[in-house]
Image (cartoon, rainbow, N blue to C red; front, side):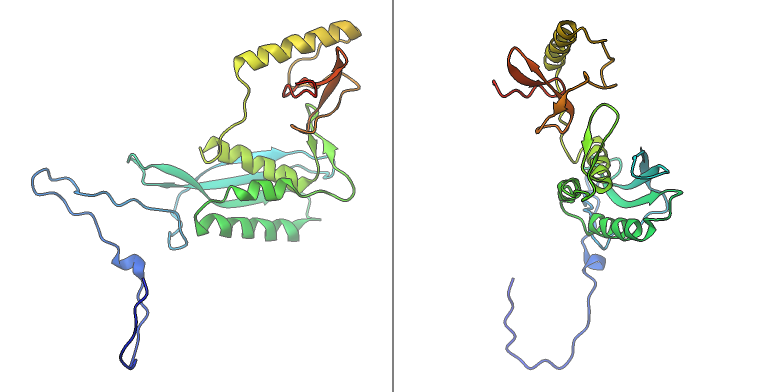
Length: 234
């Protein structure tokens, strides 16, 4: 709201709006607060003594030692219908000190974005879009990672899905059954040895443009992904 000043300013003071937020008052008839105060994520929120979090391990062929990514969350409005977890800070630890500077810079910037509040899910796409000029690598299961930064973005995506900030992309039972049948039929036609799901895909499979997994094979004259089901034939 715009306020027009009609008099000469003789003095001023800085007011902390967070100290003037209305507090819920008990209803005289029920003894319960008449209106609950919902706490939102913003920069004025102080760090609690205890945070809940998860640690993820990244093993990349680009690094001699593994990276351990820890994302700590703050629980807002605990015990109420408005309870939610929001990321508050992120740390990345490793025995490898060669990349210490950019790792510290990246985690500090990401933590600042978390604490600012609002939608932080855009970080996932920004990180996953980073490509290493020396080339990427294939993870276990044939998933292609264009860079170590992109894999950090993948870890953040997994965490945001786990706490409910992003929707997952898991296939339903019907789709999984269909892909399993397609995979078995292909391996039988090629005389290939069956591999447990998640352990890899048939040798010679190509990279899928949709799910970035080395799982595209030629079946009935059509390129089909055995991981997500994407096919050029529809």
